[in-house]
Length: 253
Image (tube, rainbow, N blue to C red; front, side, top):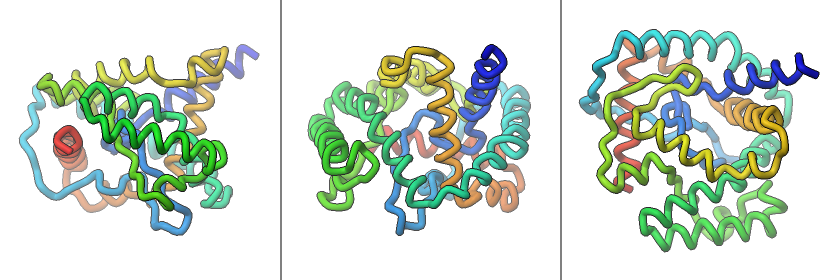
């Protein structure tokens, strides 16, 4: 049992990595929109834009070391596991993603309220009710497909930015990927709103559930990070600038 718990801890921590997040994988805090089975789905969709923004990166040597670490762990552990999991039919994996997205509603709802985005908050609440009932416990997303209620991705990092808290220097976290001090604090705050620790009794159970969520999420990816590695002369700079740009855009939306 101790060996099993230790393995769950290790795998869970590893599978939280987002070397090209955000996210997922550019944005480690964002909850994602899961497409219908017939859609050409990619969890990286719209995460990378071509425009480049200036990013304050005073600890670049440290960040590059963490980027290298996360990159190796992604290629040698995360992606192989996710690819093996693709034996599960894609519609089933999309439904699993819908379920986890539905469970994460409290995080989005609370941050909509904190930003005084009351119409968005009402829509998130409506989505939760519709998808939990009509969508069979959140396995399907009729709120989006039938009613046109789009999910509003909000997190505490965005909320802090909404109130003018600066992002601070760019930071690559081991295991968690691209971030900055504001988003790192936001990640901790969002963890308080995460329903899973309140539903499950043991910490290892929470880690196991989140591990499964991450594996399922990566299994739906179309190898976008691999394409970035092939096409960019310096993937670190590309991901750094894309992350900063995307987070700024999300705050302004």
